[in-house]
Length: 568
Image 1: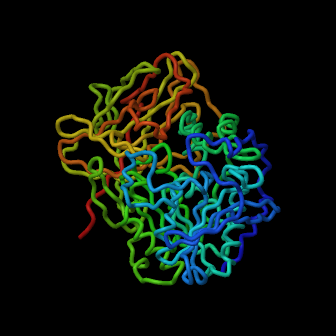
Image 2: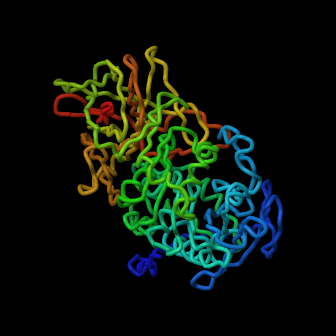
Image 3: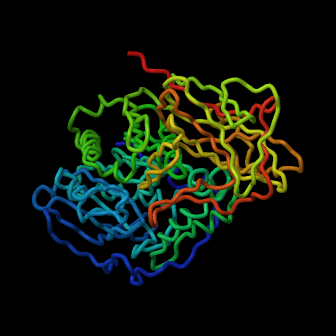
C-alpha cells in the first residue's frame, strides 16, 4: 500500500472566494428521471445486489449518498475489486441508451443500470466487480455545497475510495473509469495517492480548466461552459456557479490555480484514452496529462472516432477489463505486453489506421515550416522574399492558405501558426484557426467532431492577441504555452507577432490532396447534431479589419509535424 500524500490538507493553496448560486431541489426535476428519496434500500434484480443511498461520511462530517452494485449471492460477499464512477449527474440517471442517437452507442452495448459516461454495472458485476456511483457533496440529496473540481472535490473522492477499500466484501483495490467529468476527477484525486486506489482509466477529459474548458486561447467559451454549469444545479443547498466564476476570472489567477492538477505526482497505473475528435474540450488535456505523468505503468490510446461510441463499444470494454483484471485482480499477462502508445492516423471520417508507437509525442517527428503567401493564398515550403498583406473583415470574413502534397505524407502532433497581425479599427483581435483537408478534386474531407458530428475539421486553434505573451519555460517550438496573466492591447498601427497553438491531430494525405489553414475572426460555421454539447465563442473583441502580414521580414508560417514512415 502507498501512504497518502501529505498535501491533503491543502495548506499551500491560496484561499479562493467562490461564487455560489442556490440549487434547484431534486423534487423539482421535470422532463427527466427524478431521484428517489434519500432513504436506504436494497434489492436484487438481473443478478445484481443493489444498495441505494448508502451514506458515507467525509473527513469534515458531511455525508454523501452512493449506490453500490455487486453480484448477487455469494459472489458478491468477498474479494471484490471496485470500479468507481464519480459524477455529479445523478447516480439515479441510468439508462440503456444515450439521448443522442448520433453518438452511435448501439442497442445492447449498455444496460439500463448504466449512468451517463460511466461503466456499466451489469457487465462489470458479471465479471466479478462491484460498481459504485456517488452523488458528490452538494449534488442531489448529498449534504454540503457542490464544488466543481479542485482540491475539495478531490479530497471527497479520496475519502470515498478509502471507505470503499475497507468494505468487508472488497479486496481492497479500487479503480476509476469514465468519460469527461469522470476523467477530470481522476486527474485530481490520483495525485493525492489514496492507498486503495489501484488503477485509473481516464477516458477523454480536460486537465487545464482555463485553457481547455473556459478560455480557448484567452477567448471566453460561451456555450458549453454555460450548458455544463446548468447541468450542475440539482441540490438541496448551494452549487458553485462555474460560469459566473469563469466570467469573474478572465485571466489565469488563484481561482484557476485552485483547480490545477499535480499530474507529475500520479504513480498509479493508468490506461489513458484520448481522441483527435474532441477539439475545444478534451483532446489537448488528455494528451497533456499523459505527457506529464511520470514514466512507468501508463498506456496511451488515441482514436479519431466518437468518444461515447468508442468507450462503450464491446472491443473497448473488453480491453478495459484486461487492464483492471491485471491491476485489481492480479489476473492476466496481456497488459504488460501492450504497446505504450496506440495512435489512429485518420484518412477521413471513421476511416483510419491504428498503429503502435513507443512514445508521445513521436520522437521521429520532423517539424517543417509552410510559409503563408499573399499571392493566391498558398502555403509554401520556401519563404517569400517580398512582404505583402492579406485583409479580411474582422467580424465575418476569413482567409485561407493551401498546401498541395506532391507525395503521400503523414502529419501527427501539434501544429503551430505564427502570424504577424494588425488590428485596423480595434485594440484587440480574436483569431480562430481551422485546419482542413481537401481531396484531389478540392472537396472538403470531413472528420468526426465532438461526440456525434461527422462534418468536422481536421484541427482547431484560437488566440486573443492581447493574450499573446508566452511562458518561456513551458513553450516549445511546436507548442506555444501562453501565460494569460495580463493583457497586452494592440496600439494603432502596431504589427505584432503571435503564436497560435493548434490542438494535436493525426492525418494521412495522398499525393494531390491539400492541407488548408483558415484564419478568421469567428467560430467555424457548421451545424451540430440537435441539442448536442458544442463550444462557441460569441463574446469576441473583433471590430474593423484584420490584417495578416506575410513575406519578407514577416515570417508568418504554419509549423507542421511531418512523420516519416516507421522502420520495418
